[in-house]
Length: 119
Length: 112
Image (tube, rainbow over all chains, first blue to last red; front, top):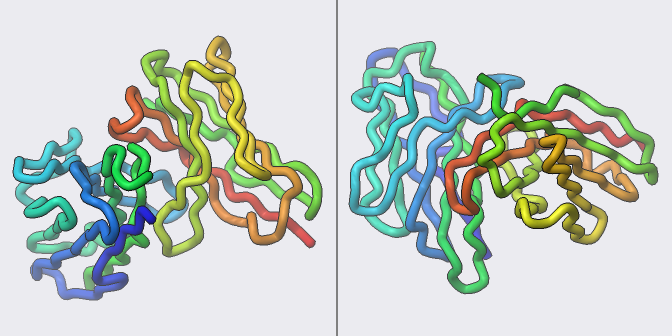
């Protein structure tokens, strides 16, 4: 149990375009989803926390107008990188937390990540 | 301000021996700690966790020790296997479901 998927796994786009990344909890309902960014050989940096049906809470220094987060249902959250620039190139990872449900503990379970390359 | 630190960027261990990965934290409000394993281009996989009310938690080959007075935790892997080679992140949070603060990671290499 506790499987989280991300789509796409890899995306290459031109500078100025927008890219949408989906995060789904496949076998549990995620009351909260988190979006992280990881630079090469660096730690995971939390970008924002999203709760189903409410606005995301962004960490300091993260532009909410650039990184749009939508948590439309208990199994889906999306991150849209708007007007992408080369410096947005990174590895984006989502996680989902489901509370105590079908044996899934209140721990964050991570998706496989999305490699974004902006040319 | 790095609240969670893994001071060893890499560790090399012989197969069958013990691997000890260390993590230090500065925020005394943290009360739940986790270890994740990560392969390149993949998301972290949850390994083991420990609450601040305990000082040890064991799951198979993995044991996490917590020393609250020293604000230090460690992950022991015994015996180490080549498949354990990956980057290990420790993480801390103020409650079990709160946002995680990650360390920088330690790359473990287990040699046959």
